[in-house]
Length: 239
Image 1 (cartoon, rainbow, N blue to C red):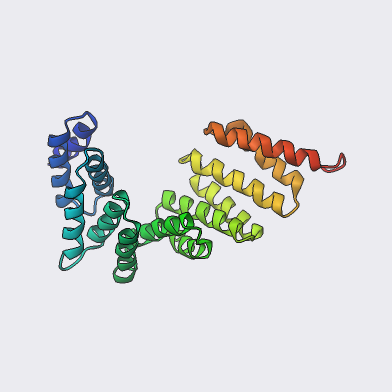
Image 2 (cartoon, rainbow, N blue to C red; image 1 turned 90 degrees about the vertical axis):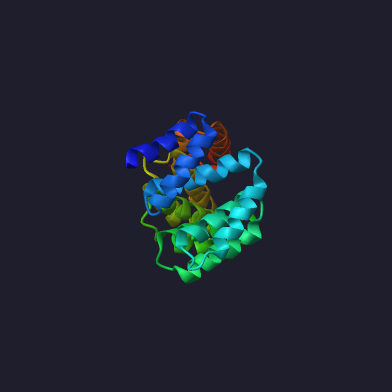
């Protein structure tokens, strides 16, 4: 039954790679829509990459793209595999097909976020912002939080600190306590956006929060440095 298949996910973690992989593939094909299936798919791909089985993955990519009829899951996985194989163009074309053929599928929204991240990585901030706006509509809180964060970062790069601040606030709220890494990057972004608007006293408050509580050591150090730089510009009367 279902519990037995899930055992595959557990045994994979325990290092029984081959049994776990077969179990997980069985689970994925039996319950393709299950929320754990997405996680299992990604684990399978990551495991194959680690084991250096890139030929298997390249073959899997071809198989998934050749499926008739195509499924949203299959096309999304193909894109994920391509990105793991270091083939961003293939990943992007798979995800573009997904958004065109399955516009209302949750994975299409997920693909918008993946595409936005690719665009941002290439320095194409306008496209990144547009794609991130598509992904903020996700029902998945984690996807929404990451999309808002990326939107904020793109708006900052486009020299639009006002909308950037709004997106960062939404990202911090969506991330809540679930994803402190995203939450504190969003708070740091808000600090920057406020600083760029000349709201120095406000930005210091954000930097204080990040410097005190961010889980990431480098982010804490960065926030302390920004705080010091901004505090030096504050006149004694600015509170």
